[in-house]
Figure 1 (cartoon, helix red, strand yellow):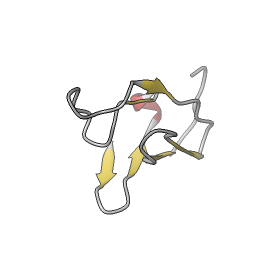
Figure 2 (cartoon, rainbow, N blue to C red):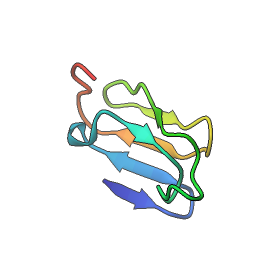
Figure 3 (tube, helix red, strand yellow):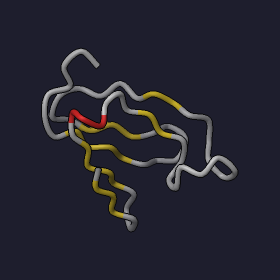
Length: 63
């Protein structure tokens, strides 16, 4: 998993699935509720709570 802090874009691989977001820093005291994000192969999705964009490089498979 590779994160770019400036624009909150996170590059992920199929090994990082299932995809869940709990806030930009993933700290329980200042995050948002943990949400699972439905991502498709070789695509991206934005978290509705914090705006972090996740980009999947590869096949999503059964996730």
